[in-house]
Image 1: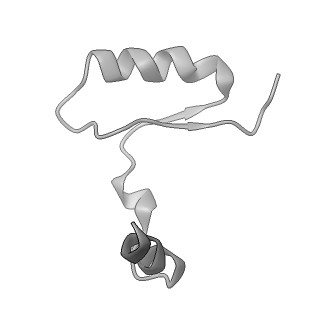
Image 2 (image 1 turned 120 degrees about the vertical axis):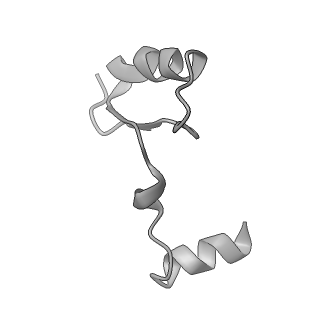
Length: 54
């Protein structure tokens, strides 16, 4: 993990290229969990952005 963090911090690896599914906000967590349950072939982990706390 340390080496991975250094690669990202130094700009040698862009983790955004590995994100296939993005969900915006807490209201979408159930959608992310459903996507994990019915996992498509290209899914590693869904990413939930939680900027909008409501």
